[in-house]
Image (cartoon, rainbow, N blue to C red):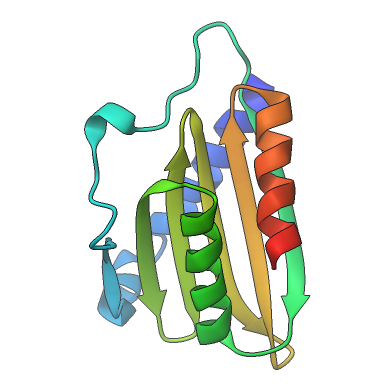
Length: 140
């Protein structure tokens, strides 16, 4: 599981920094939401001696990226996530947030003219990670 976690982190790092000049110039908004300022004390952590778990999900939605983003933000707030950060680009929106020792990422984009949401939840406890992933995608 450690290898899977490391591959995931490498993928996120590489995809986040690929073509940095063009991505940075396209970013419209990237800041913590006003109600959820970053708090280093509550940052997600992986417990020692426990392999991290990563659960993902995706769903095709009716509507556009903006409606997907509004719904994603409402879902994260309703489930009690903290440190919610929103990054808006011309054709996609990303959300990142913490829930105790778990971290979530949600990506809203357009595929074949319809909104598409992809999300991942990572943490130490399999049951918690699975439950958070299920709760997020059931609400979409």
